[in-house]
Length: 196
Image 1 (tube, helix red, strand yellow):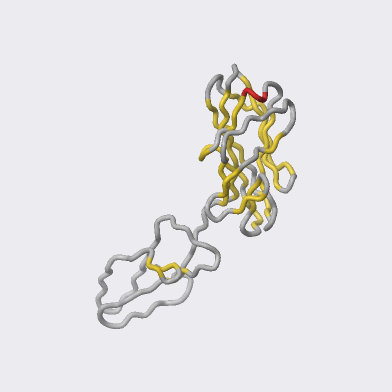
Image 2 (cartoon, helix red, strand yellow):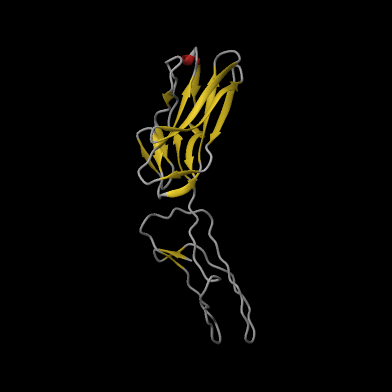
């Protein structure tokens, strides 16, 4: 298997005898493939005659990883009782970040928007509200998610199936009723927004 003419995976030798049909399968480990690159498959026989059959059993498929973004740097909310868009994100490979959100690569009639906030509490028992938005429209809200006292809590959220269009922006927001500045949204893999 090649990407832009560079070999990324080689299969093992398959023995054949006489006239028979053999299904050959080959897949790579996760790799980065950019728009415009060409993926091809080559097959070579050592002896005799090979025929590659057409139809549904012969195909090349690129599985796209979920588009997403990961929090870049600590963020401490400072407003009590207000919904605040979580800022400062780094795009995952192949994704596009616009403002405080991530954009879908293609239109999709039944996408899932998911996210998670990793919240460090410097307070006693408390709770946080979190919501996901697509182009400013709320698609999922959770309220009073309990936070561990003086500890880190991962707060997951996920929409149901929803249509997304190219150019739309998915964001995540949070709200603390009081003592907002006692909480830190952590960067890294545990704070993210994804479109699948």
